[in-house]
Length: 179
Image (cartoon, rainbow, N blue to C red; front, top):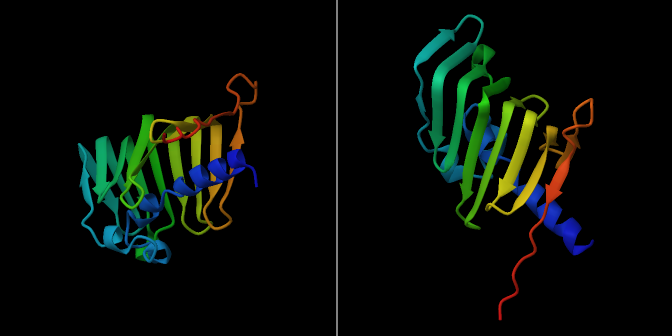
């Protein structure tokens, strides 16, 4: 495997956004990956909250900020679909919707944004839609109109828009050699 391929794979692995999956303890299959953070309290602040227990939907609106450990999500609206207290989907909307997470073990800060970020729990897929961009430590970046990350298969698909005006772009910054 070439160094560039290894760097891309390493960056993509960082983009697992395990923090998003651990955001709600309703997603236990990833809890073993980040046990200490998944046990930390979840703090959500918003201007408004609407909960429909019968349908299993919670919608936070207006300058929504979610924190759990080093994970931070931000958007104008965050909707959590959880029928029968089983996480099905998390949808974050914003101009842009944002996330950031610090991997304490590697001291690596991952940030991302898109018009919409969707996590589908049953498929274990994270989708960034509209002006999607993810960066690691302010260096490596992946952007496009749509980024789809399959967390189980650890595969990433990046797409340009239908007019091909917003093409897929990857920026890799070489590591500086220590002297």
